[in-house]
Image (cartoon, rainbow, N blue to C red; front, side, top):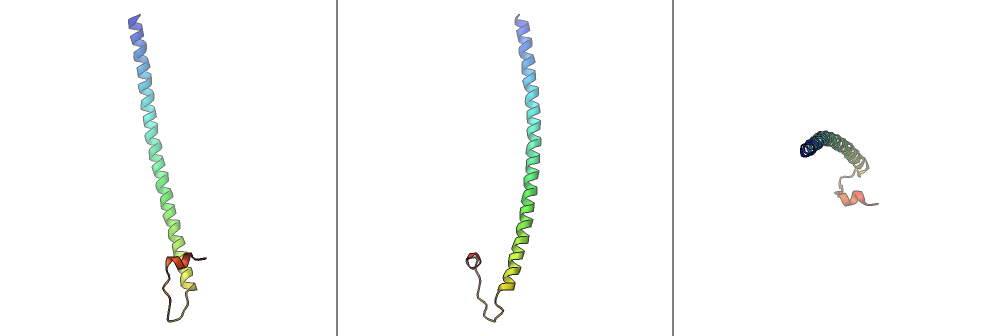
Length: 81
């Protein structure tokens, strides 16, 4: 009876070990793919932001007065409504 109980306990321990290994492996894959997706997203955000800033700069150049005495613009001037 004791021998049977020990054998059962070993088998259960093996099952938990195998399950834990599989969960750990799955977790590593999930983290790797999450990092890849996050990096791709950040690259796209930087690219989009760069294009948006270039458009804003071009618009400001077009709107700026063409006179000799140009006022210096600050970010507060741009953000005013």
